[in-house]
Structure formats: structure tokens, C-alpha cells
Image (cartoon, rainbow, N blue to C red):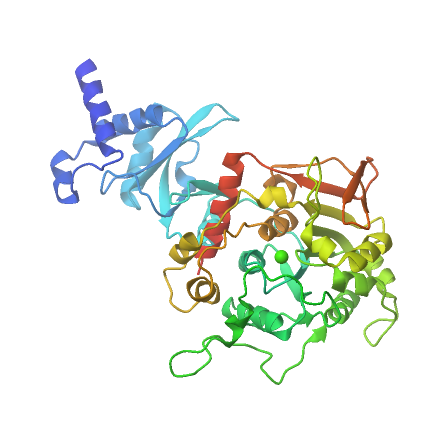
Length: 462
Ligand SMILES: [Ca+2]
């Protein structure tokens, strides 16, 4: 018996990580189901956190999104492995094991693999099969599949055309739209220059949402700092001189003033239903608050904000011991002061300070690798032609993820309090359980890595 057990351990070891010899040889070592069940049991001991085994190759797959079949759930005893194997043989021949820390049981199941670029399909299959999560082998992360489909209505307000995290945050919103997790009502570009709005138009078209309205700031921050100049992406041409990327608005088209687009959209929405994700300046929001009645609504901007906006997720703010003032708020300090002074106290604010996104460094190499499946992609074009590597941190997506997925997607969120902006751009926080403001706290290395990998997984989708 002991000898047999040692054999199983060896077979299990051989299966990982080098694979069980070449595929053509694997059949020479083909085990009976009884022996295979023992191997799988041993692998469960060796991989307390979980494993996936492809029985065709006797390798642990390094790619693919794994979803468990409903028929093999609750298989947590050694005896149940035979049933799991039978199901796997009749399907994709992939077996997984994972530990549930809540129940203290180690589960085995038969898995269906999806390509890494098909997260939406994997999540849909998981939901059909009543699974809580799916698992990406490439990125080593699980993604929750049993999310509640809520009515989340978002206006995305960004300073497109400088840092590339605004692009990735918008990309995440399109992905959430694909998954029916939110409705993107409009995009406001608060960095002047129509090229920045044209860049959003390109993204709308590329990601399949050509009709999402775009507003553009016309009286905002004069000549703000540009960290990475990519706004000309909208005008990229191929060697025949043809535009590479489609746009809806076109060269002759006009963009509505950003605050006007806010008014138009808000006037049409149910009360307290709109979430604003603000990852640039707050100039359009500030002008909205100061606006009077117009063709879209008899209400003032202040009344519209009070009546229609539920919450605002802001990338920015500096909390704790740091002295460095936030760029987005200080660059437009007059607007920012007016914004915080006028914003109704019953609109919730969640800040995502720079330090939360600082560890999420998405390298140019990784971006190009993640988009290697295509040659025609606006973000890839930017990274191939304009950026060497500007050490872009993924700050803005953290405000989007929080807005759509809620607080549980974030490492930790502060208690409630009130926010005061000083004329030099400091964000002063006064704790108060009745306050309207909270802020994200930086995560540990594991959390930060997981979030970056999540953004990468979303980038790969197509
Ligand atoms: Ca930004």
C-alpha cells in the first residue's frame, strides 16, 4: 500500500509543473480511474489552495478561465473523486480542486475551460451552473460570477489625453457594459481640445458603443500638464493614408459643452439614480453646479445634482500623512473649491487617492503583450507608437471598479466623514458617522497585484 501511495505522489509530482512527459507518451502511463482518483487526491494535499489538471496532457494548464460544472459540485470527499472523473471524461477532461476556507472542505470538480479573452462567456456559464467564481489560470485570480445585476447608471468624467489610465478606466466600463453590470450614460472630457473627445469617440466605436454621447470642456484648465501625449491617436492613418479608427462625430461634428451634457443626461434620469466617476478635473462638475435653467431642464444645476446624482467616485485626494497635494484638484483649484463648496451634502463621495493605485504598474510591455491578439487597437497603437514606458499606474480604474462592483472590490474603505478642500489643494478629512465622504485605503501587495491582473484580464477581452 505504501509503495502504491509513493507511486501516486511521484505521478502527481511529475504532473507538475513539467507535465507528464510528452503528450504522445502520456497514454503509456495512462492510469486506471481508481489510480487517477488517488493522484487527484494527493494533488489536493500538495496544493492546499487549489489546482487544475488537464487529464489529456497530465499538465496543469497555464492559460484559460476555468468554470466548474454544477453536476460535480459538493464533491468534497475522497470517494466523490470517481464521480468527478467520470464527468470530466464525458466533458473536457479537466479536473480542479480548491479549498473553501469558510466550510473547511476541499472540493473537487469537473471544469469547463474558456479562453482568457472570453470572461463574459465564462461568467455566464458560471451563473448557469450556480458557481460563485471563475478562475483565470494565466493571472492566478478568481473573478466573482454571482454578482447582483444592479441598475448602475454612470457618467464618466475624465481628463482623456494625458495619462493612459483614463483609457483603461473607460475600457473597464465598456467591459462592465458587456457584462450588463452598468449603463454608461455619457462621457465628459474635462481636458480642453477636441482631440481628447475624438479619442473617446474612437474608443466608443472600437468597443462597440458608438452612440454613447460625449461632452467636452470648453472653459476649463488652460494648458494643463500632459504626462503622455496620445490625443492624436484619433487621427492615426495607415500607409494608404486612410484613418485607422472609426469615429461617430467626425471632423465636422461638434461636441456639447461638458456641463451641458451633464444637464441633458441628468434631466432624463430617475431621481437619485446617477453615479459620477470623476477621474480628471472637476471643472465640468463645477460649471454644472453653477449653471441655470436651460433647454434641457428648468432646474438649476445645483437642483439637478441634488435630485439626480446618488454618488461620486473621485480619483484624487490626499489623506493620512502625505503632504503632496493632489494634481487633479490643484490644477483646477478655483473650480475645485467651488465644487466642494456647492456639492449637496447628501451626495456621497468616495475618493480613490493616488497611493491606492501607485502599486498597480501596468508596463508598456504587458499592455502590448495583452493586446497581441490584434494589430488594430487604439490602446495598442498608443503603446506601440507613442509610449516607450512612462510607468503608468492604474489609478483611474480603481474609481470605476469601486463604483460598479461596490466596496467589497476594494481593500478597505475609511469611515465616514466630511471633506474640506483648502485653497492650496489639501483635502482635510473630519471623521463623522453622518458625513458624506469616505476614501479608499491602500491595499497590501497581494491585493494590488490581484487588481492589476484583473485590469489586465479585462484588457485581453475581445
Ligand atoms: Ca485621469
